[in-house]
Image (tube, rainbow, N blue to C red; front, side, top):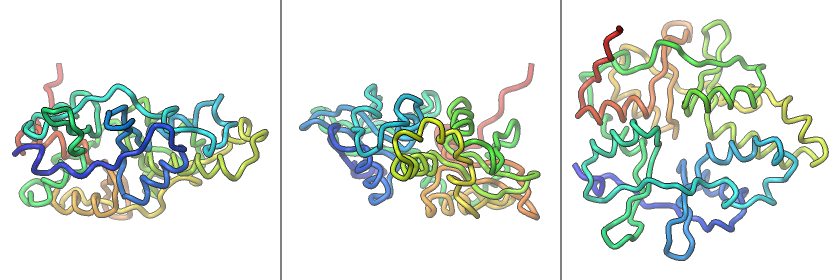
Length: 274
């Protein structure tokens, strides 16, 4: 299967647009990235993670989001795919590089689409013979409490390379913190709190102020088709995996599904312990 068969129409934005407009556009178009262009030239990409990172920088906190531009937050170094690339190769590239998506450029250098882990994850919506427990991450889970500081939680997510983190209390799932909810919370803070107070008050934002409450979850015994469908329908990249009583036993998400596709639709064999 080639990239051209599942890629989607890119949503573009100029690099001199306001960051606040970009955040609204991401929500309106239900996408997790914008392709930044200048004329007909590709200049970069902008994601919720980029916006959260920019708004969380200490020297930028005092600046209102309405005064920041896309160029101040976008990622300029962009890896691209070709419409004729094999989808398993692109999936492997995303896993190896820690990418969540990339623009698709044709032989003439024209932007013709975008491919993300969401499109790749959609390929497992018909896989009924693999259970969530076979793909989910269950060791070294990264979780956060509802009253912990948002800036610290975001830093932990960034260090671990996670796009979502369950919010728990005694192993019981209360919510889900994502790059999107962090970016939106910091944007609200930027608008609602006067400039002179932001530098001190940003440290007071708690996870509960940003988390998605009562997020959809997955059952370890259900097929990955159901989990992938539920995740994509909610426009998420991660689902907490829970058992009776909403007890957290793992997480499963777009990265796991992409790794499965990269392995030619087979459950990856974990590396042997030495």
